[in-house]
Image (tube, helix red, strand yellow):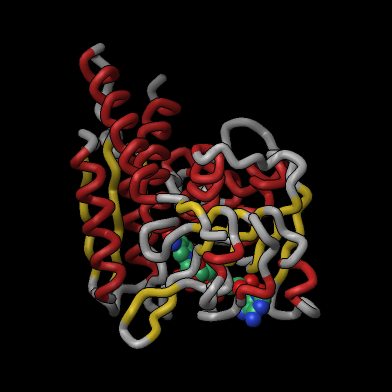
Length: 283
Ligand code: NAP
């Protein structure tokens, strides 16, 4: 078997086109134009690249953007103050603080400082809580929401599937498991202390790997025909790779390329969440 491609780039393009259309319709009807404010502390090259892509994606769909850069030695206080100003700024619909931030920044304080309505990443406990409880109105975090969207648009059935998520971070693993559960999958969450990872992964109709460990998932750990989503961004010999070892594409039924799978979907959902934040603020 050679797996079919879960093409994140192509699906992201569709989502950008849909948001672009929705922004145009809203603005032509006299509605407000959404605005995304991004905050980057320091000059980590990967983070700079991510922020520039996010800014570009916003512009491409007609969303305004502001790019706030702070030096690497910035204090938590300064970031919290900036976030407070953006919360109060009527023109800003959505705020993104790029992670990882330098080690002296207390990201818990920064996230708690965000107005939940403008928390486009869905990291604030109010949003995380609403999503966890299945209450309406919570912002779903971009990477997990992008994974669900990618599965849906490929027509992969989530309801009733055995879904295994490798990783339990607040950023990826935990919210992905919750969204799969919300969609009636039977969900298993694995982590670094899981005994015999392969016994779980081999049972997965949907396998989401977000461990950040190259070659963790070998082909014998994958069920024939499974839908496999490789979230991780690892660097091996200067090349971006995920968690999957060689030959997984021969066993899986569907597979995300890496790069070109979850990354573009994360950015697409950020843009969609920005639009939705403005609609929630000013229906
Ligand atoms: P993280 O906070 O480091 O979490 C990694 C998770 O994997 C932890 O729960 C850890 O378990 C688990 N783990 C580590 N080694 C394992 C092993 N050998 N077996 C089973 N589980 C293992 O990372 P993250 O923020 O969730 O991100 C995960 C990966 O996704 C990273 O490579 C990141 O760069 C990438 N990422 C990509 C996107 C995208 O848009 N493509 C977005 C976000 C993140 P413990 O909890 O027990 O330590």
